[in-house]
Amino acid sequence: MTATDAHSKSVTAVFDEYALLPDTYYTNPNLQIPIIAESYSKFAGLIAFFLYSAKFSGRRPVHVDVGSGSGNLIDVMLKTVPGPDYIGIEPSGAMVKLSRKRFADSDSVQIYQGSTSTLTDIVEEGSASVVTMHNAFHYVSPDQAVSAMSQLRAILQPGGGLILSAFRPDFDLEVLARKNIRAVYSDKFQEWLRDQVSIPPQLMSYALAIENLVTQFEGGNLGIADFFKNVAEYTSRLPKECLNALPVRLSNGLISSMPLEFQLNPLVHKYSREALTSLLIPHFSIKSIDDHYDGSQHLVVALAN
Image 1 (spheres, rainbow, N blue to C red):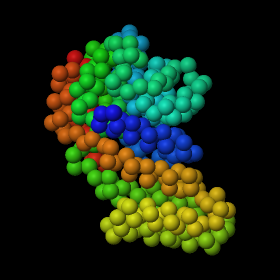
Image 2 (cartoon, rainbow, N blue to C red):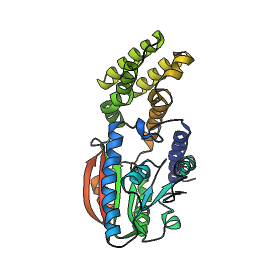
Image 3 (cartoon, rainbow, N blue to C red):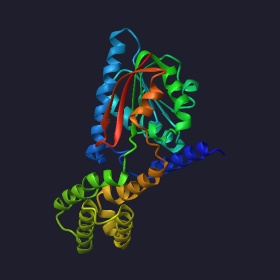
Image 4 (tube, one colour):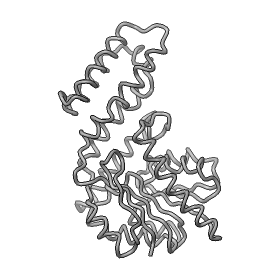
């Protein structure tokens, strides 16, 4: 097995784990923190432009989402622009199963297992109005990136849009987490506590402990590994009835899923603006490369030559 194959297998394995969690932001839009919801919203506006452009030009609007996960972006688009064909392509078999179940009643959505190396085996060349890789291109290794761009271009109509996001070289997941940890753990928890008529003493102690951990981590006085270790330790001490009473965001959502993000972190490939430009130029006209995702990513919009 090559290093590239091992890397792809490792990424897929983590997303297989994600798919088995009962309720996370991958499967429940109500659990998305603002930075994630804003990212989907930004992509949706750009995708809509290309879909309407295709429709007004007399072509069938088709959106292909590569690295589609459980189908969150497609779900957003179904509500934003109903009518086009939506195709999701995802390497994780467990995520494919999850998204096929999610869209079982939709005639306009098709989900396939595949990757950037198999796009032309799945999608007719020159058929897509817009292709996206939302929070996904950074899992493409540099030695695969050239062929990936060729595959992305091949399935696009001339003038069709490519929209992708990729982490920048100066990206630091711990810094990003410090900025967003309160939205992940604390805010919704406190909101939930305020709605309770009575709270068991153990649960109140737990809430105070979590709030203290969030404050320490947010202020830089606690590292990310120790933060998750302490959250897991405090959670393991809760009686079962208290654990079952926790809001889903904490109990089987982000307590389980946030640590998985840090398993993915070493698997992320970071791309500079110059590297992305070099990859794009042979196949695309670049419209913009902007800051995205709280400044941690590049957001690329390009037109197929």
